[in-house]
Length: 446
View (cartoon, rainbow, N blue to C red):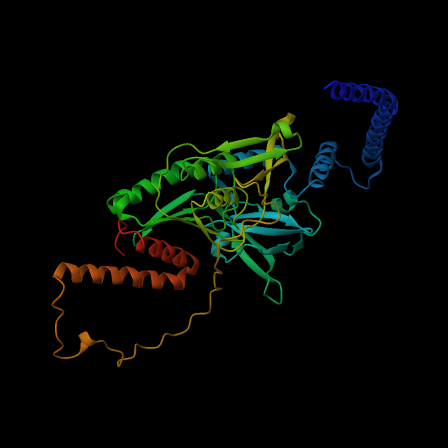
C-alpha cells in the first residue's frame, strides 16, 4: 500500500513541477493570441474607414457592419446567419404559422440555393418545385455568390406579384424557368384523415401548433372510426417536412413513446449537453406506426423518425432524409436584430448523429415520378367472373351481412390500389399496417 501511495504523491509533485515549468510559455502564448486578435480588429477598423472614405459610391455604415457580421456567421456553416430586424420578425411570424412568400424551405450548397422541401398547398408546391431542386436565377438575375438571406430577399415580394425562378433539377438535361405567384402562406401544421382503417397524420412543419394539432386530429379520427379498436395503425407522414422547433419534435416523439430517451444534444462544452426523455402515455395506444420520410425531411423531422426508429416503435419507410443534425439557437441582439448560431449537434437514442448522413429507412420505397397522362384502354368485355355468368349458383355459406362486409373490404382494398397511382409511398405504408394487423386477431377487419 505504501508503494502505491508514494507513487501517487510522486505523480502529483511531478505534475506541479511540470505545470510550473510550462505556465510561463502558456501565459505568453495567450497574451500573443490576444494581441493578434486586437491587431485583426484594428485591421477591420482600417478597412471599414477606407471603404467609407474611398469607395466609388457612398455606403451606409450600418449596412457595412451588418454585411461583415453576416459574413462572419455564414462562414461557419450553412445554418448560422445574422437576422436583420425585418428578418427576425419574419422568422417569429413563421413559427406562428402564417407568412408571405413562395412556400419553400431552402438552404445553401456550393453557392446555390437548394430547395430542402416545398410546403404543402403553397404556390411553390403547385408549380411543381421539388426537394433537391437548385435555384440559380431569380427573375433572370443570378444568385450565385449571394448569401442565403440576400437570395431569399430577392424571392420575397408583395402577395399577388409574379416571380420567375430558374431551376436545375437532377435528371433534367437543361435548366428551366418556373413562374410563381407569391401568396400568403398559411401553414396547417398537421392534417389528419383516415384511409380505410389507417389514420394518416400529415405533419408539414414543427411550429407552435404542431403537437396540439396532432393530438386533436388523431383523437378526432379515432372517434370517427368508432374507437381505437377500429383503427389498424397510424401513418406519420413527415415527407418534405423541413423541421422547425426542437421542443415540438420532442413532444411529437413523446406522443408515441412511454419511456426512454428521445434525443440528446451536445455542444462545445460537454457539461452543457441535454437529454430529453419520454413520459408515460401513447396517443396511439400501442397500435403500429409507419413513418414516411424522404430527402425533404430535415431537422425536427429526423429527430422524430430517428427516435421512433431506435425504439422500434415505428417502421420507417421512404428514402433517406436530408441529414441536418445540428441545432441552432436564435439570440436577440441590440437594435431588434438576432443571430442564428449553430450551438450543438443532436443524437438519436442509440447515440448516432444524423448530420450529413440522414435517417435511413427500414424499407426503401421510391416515389415514382409522375408520368404524362395517357388515355386509358376500355375495360375488356371478356374479363368476367363466375358471378357474371347467367344462371350461376348463389353463395350459400354466407349471410347477407357477411357478403356486404366482404364487398366493403374489397372496396377499401380497391381504394388503396387507386391511391398507389396518386401516392405510391403512402399506399405502401397503409399496406404495411394491413399486413401487421392481419397477424393481430384483435385488429380491425380489412
